[in-house]
Length: 242
Image 1 (cartoon, rainbow, N blue to C red):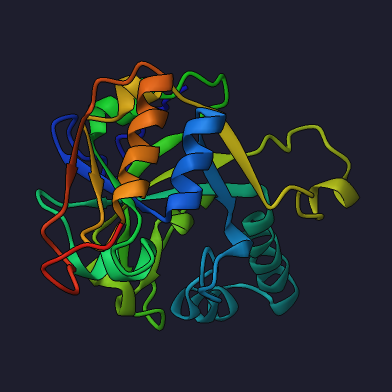
Image 2 (cartoon, rainbow, N blue to C red):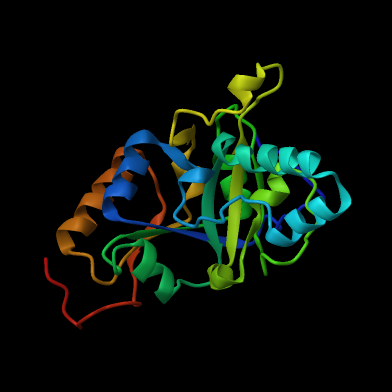
């Protein structure tokens, strides 16, 4: 269930989004008919979802150390309670994304829009959708809640132009020892109508003919009418090998 958050940078419904997959992950998407959300503390980036250093310094400057320390601990603890799905905002494909996230252009990219993505998720779990802010982690962005904190990344990643879906697990009413522990699942799947989601499915330029046939069969099995084509980006040679 989509949650409108006017305090976040939420793109308009017509904004184009992309998601890049290895072939294995795309096949899992088709099989599960669900979008995978990774737990925030499982990302490779060690700063993912953490309180910016500038904010930490301001907290210790304006509050007693034991208070600032407790607040920082609780804020960072929510990394283990929050699940994220990452998408790229772009009108066209990205060579860098093909290389980084689709096994050097041997995988698959899904083209959609913000409106399609929001409406395609049929799961009852709530989520927000907003643009990531890229900043120097020594600054003080003055974030007020966990969603805002999960939408902050280092300047090193600004080329990704990321839009995120964020699901925060409910901790209301839980015992303190339970609240302070991360969830056991490294990720969750939110049920999605893939036919509504996918406007276009693009095969990496280095994918094989057999992979193309496999993806086509998967789309037919779920009665998806999305356009299927080959990419012109990232091709290592003019002739593909089947």
